Length: 169
Ligand SMILES: [Zn+2]
Ligand SMILES: [Zn+2]
Image (cartoon, rainbow, N blue to C red; front, side, top):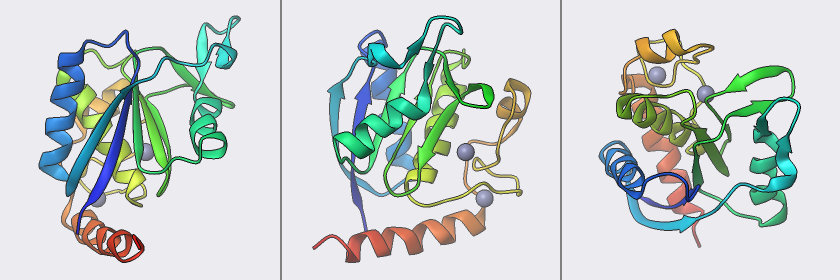
């Protein structure tokens, strides 16, 4: 019951940070293999007026064009999605996710949001319990939630990991 994760990272992020994120993800999820690939953001997803990148376009570029699954893209630029001023991250369940470190100053926050997005990759939705899968609309809420999964999400995760394992071949 394990899966392979591809970590993409914006080359402007220090490698040490990428390394710490991977260690933290391995503590929470059954990841058996990680490929780590440097990937700068696509220039045509930058909105000059907003001074932000379009997170949805970035995510779609990997899912629709490159047909990738189980990837987490770590970036340090500010992201938005249509209708929202900014996002800490965004995901497409069973495909992949992006986390932006732009508004997450501490390592603890970067790790927490990376765990949250990885949970989405493995099919978890938002959770109302005391849980890392809580939705956070601002930095206070993101700061307040724990960096661990609640029991319900842990149970669901095990079921989802089993499904992923069965679908492998
Ligand atoms: Zn979320
Ligand atoms: Zn939960």
